[in-house]
Amino acid sequence: MIKVYGVPASRTFRTLWMLEELGLPYENIPTHFATGDTRKPEYLAINPNGHIPALVDGEVTMWESMAINLYLAKKYDKGLMPKSLVDECHAIKWSFWAMTEVEPHLVTVLMHRMFLPPDQRDAKVVESAIEKLNKPLAVLDAELTDRKYLVGDGYSVADVNVASVLAWVSLLSIDVTKFANLKRWLDVCTSRPACKKARGLMGA
Image 1 (cartoon, rainbow, N blue to C red):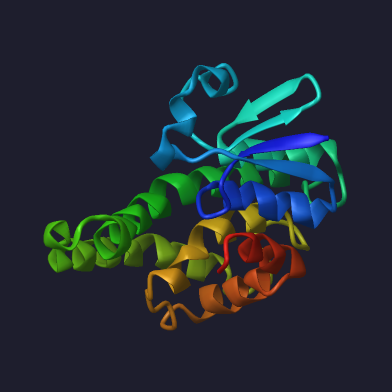
Image 2: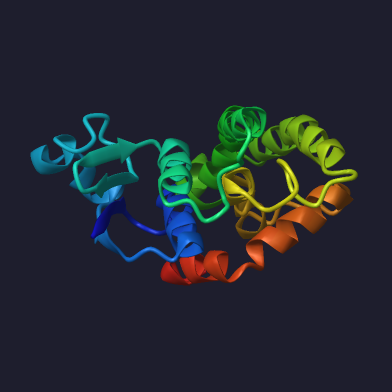
């Protein structure tokens, strides 16, 4: 059985969402960065970076949430990996984009609204991070002007990967209503049963 190391309320959520989309049996092995789990020798033997998630699928060990999802979509093909080389590369492109252009700003908001001690939180830092989000969100909104999904003609791993990053906007109370195309797409993606199941695992 596939083993997923991590906790649902983390980037592991992305992998759990993908596994639910694929309908694959898996075991989620609780591994939390805050408790020192990710620094234990037995876990470092799986992911020497000491981050979550990590996935073990038989003889294959994979880490980095986006790579894990791309691997799962391609190996357990149920239509989530685009068929053409160009569309597959677009899926990879959007996955990298979400990690580099969007996630850092969301992490900043997360730290200053939820994780840092109250006396270390800075509303101006939050305001700046949300302002910086406007540019990449406008790029995604424009891409979705005449498209229901990001790549090709249907829902794919690109949508799972990018929506799993943007799913945090609701938790962080970030208003994206001015990006109407983005909001429509995100609502469709996060309304899927697989997303709801993965969210339910973290009590969200």
